[in-house]
Length: 290
Image 1 (cartoon, rainbow, N blue to C red):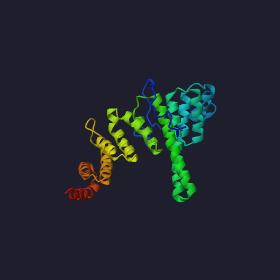
Image 2: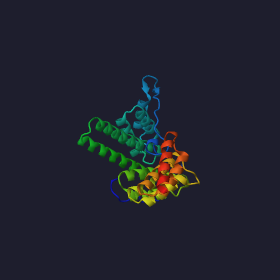
Image 3: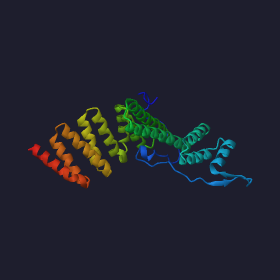
Image 4: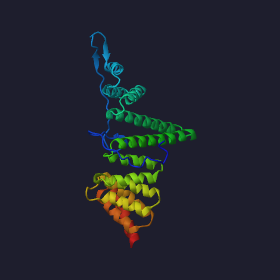
């Protein structure tokens, strides 16, 4: 479904749910992680006879009150914390079926699916590193595509539920770019860039998209915006990365003046270990300029 270029990039026209909306995993975006590893409490049943671990109590609560969402969430968190992935998936899928509008439950299930897809990708990377055969290369490529598709699906679903969370669009666009769906990614990034605090991040990704499409002037313009926005100013890591990409791109297409411009700005924020090499690079560019 996620591989089709049909309706995903068309931004959904829904209204925000009430309350604060959850954010994507830190590992897959620049926002907070919702994963937790709760300790497992030991409880005693109401008759005071048979000691029950907390997960056993919750399994009973779910059987007795299947339409109550909180036991699914707590039990799912326990199973995630214990890395009992199949039990976590079983509980959370049952919970979503029984309580399809409970946001914490939806988020925890989505995070679990992302976690599982990422684990499969990590395993494929390890296997390929140990034995770089054609079959293992193919398996790695498939795991990479599957992980990107899972991120697309999660971002799409969360944005439909919470269209006020524009930062989701950037993670969504990164996954689309990974699958070479560049025009779709650009559409989402243009929308994200309308939000002031996301402008620099969105512009950095736009530059990468234009570079992939071999549109260097548009890419340079986007990198420049990402690095040099004044209000609000970009994060240091965003500014540095945008200037690095702009410098490399300007040099590759023979724009000496632009290369010098970006190099001098980069020198102001470069890491200490890279400053000497950058100074030499500037000297070489100044020689070419003459």
